[in-house]
Length: 107
Image 1 (tube, rainbow, N blue to C red):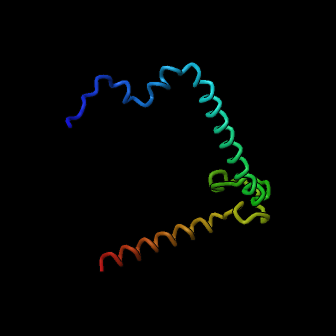
Image 2 (image 1 turned 180 degrees about the vertical axis):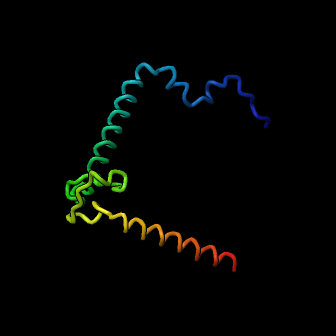
Image 3 (image 1 turned 90 degrees about the vertical axis):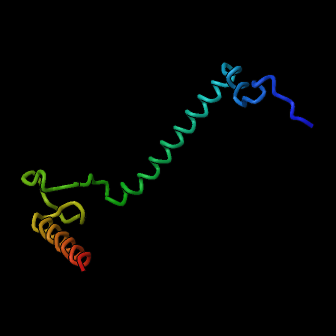
């Protein structure tokens, strides 16, 4: 039996019904997007709370060498203060590691 040609392509369009009835569907879609967005924001906030507690409610200083004169070092939190000497030692260790990696690649 030969296939019957399709005379109307509208029957093959799965979203045609949604497009035709968008006025009734749109409030539900907007409500769904709003609800999911609110849920994501709440879950992110709940995920940040343990980090705030772990850091002892202090704002971390990301790079203390930038405003070195204004810093008042404290030993309360280990990530709060890094001396310039420690920064220099860390950079030297990185350079030495890069040199060792470079020598291993040449061999």
